[in-house]
Every structure is written in C-alpha cells, then in structure tokens.
Amino acid sequence: MPALASTRKPNDSTTVVSPMTKVLIPGSFDPLHLGHIDVVDQAVELFGDVVLGVLVNFEKPSGLFSPDERVALARASLSERPTVTVQAFGGLAVQAAAEVGAEFIVKGLRTPNDFDIEQQMAHMNHSVTGIRTVFLPCRSDLGFISSRFIREIATNGEAIDHLVAAPVAVALADRFAGRSNE
Ligand code: PNS
View 1 (tube, rainbow, N blue to C red):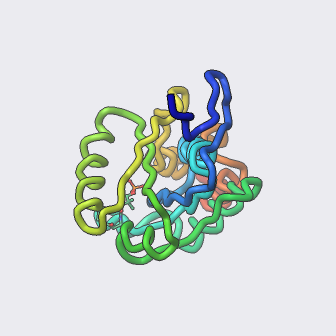
View 2: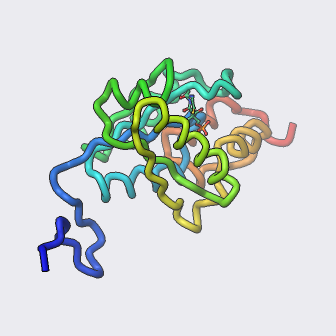
C-alpha cells in the first residue's frame, strides 16, 4: 500500500501536509471577530501560510471602519501568528489570490445559510480563474458571531469584548464612547 502524503495520526492536532501552502481568506472584516480568528487558526493548521484579504463587498461598500482601519485592527489582532499577513485589495477575490500567489481561497461557514451564497461564489470564482475554494466549519461555540451584529451592539453602547480581540474591543469602545443606553 502506498505511503500517505500526510503524516497525520488520528489525534494529531497540528500536522501540516508539507510544504506550506499559501491560502487567501477574503472578507469585509468590519471588524474582525473571534469567529474569523478561529477560521484563520484552522487555515494555519491545515495550510501553513495565510493571507487575510480585506476586500470590498459590493453589496455593503461603506462600513464602520475604513479599509485601512480594518487592516490595522486585523494586523494587531493576529500579530502573534507569524505565518499570517493582512492586506487590503481593491478588486476581485480571484485577483487578490493571483496577486499573492494563493493556491486556494478559504472561507469559514457558520450556518447552512452561509453555504448557499458561498457555494455560488466558489463556483463563480472557479469559473473565472480555476481557483478552488475550501470551506472550513466555524467552531460551533463561535458560529453565532457576526460583524454586523457586533457593529449594531457596539453602536448602541453594549459590551462586545467577549466576541473580538482586544485591539478591536478598544477601537469600538473609542468609537462609541459615551453612547451607553443614551
Ligand atoms: O465578509 P463578507 O462581506 O461576507 O465578504 C464578502 C467578500 C468581500 C469576500 C466578497 O464580497 C468578495 O469576494 N468581494 C470581492 C469582489 C468579488 O470578488 N466579487 C465576485 C464574487 S463571485
């Protein structure tokens, strides 16, 4: 029987098939939250080299934080992960993937609803450049988190510190200081 390409054993938690593979995780990240970070960590474990791409979702072009602010907050939140870089891109996800030399696009899935649109985008992206998308299930205890609801809750002065990394919590507190139940 031929040897397996991976040396993974049943309970190995962090066995990466070598060599490192570069993947792109595209998203709005307005702002980055703990669900996103879980997907980043899974991608690091599986592939090694991760580019988090801050892209424009043309259905929600304006946001709470500017693209530069989102990049700065994501960099600060992911600074202890040496194989993760964060970059803003202006065009398509497939163009961003080509620019950085990513072999795959990686997307996190929270719910079955996420799958519908993500599957369509994966097929669209594959039809344009041939790039494949790999879906990773979000950790079950983090799957309820969404950037939209974080924005809504923080805007109205309630705490979201348990849902985001410290740099994002500080930025949201600064942005909405004094708005608690006003
Ligand atoms: O975090 P989001 O808003 O769900 O991310 C969506 C995003 C930014 C990944 C998606 O809108 C995207 O890929 N935008 C770039 C433009 C693009 O590639 N459009 C074609 C999609 S098939």
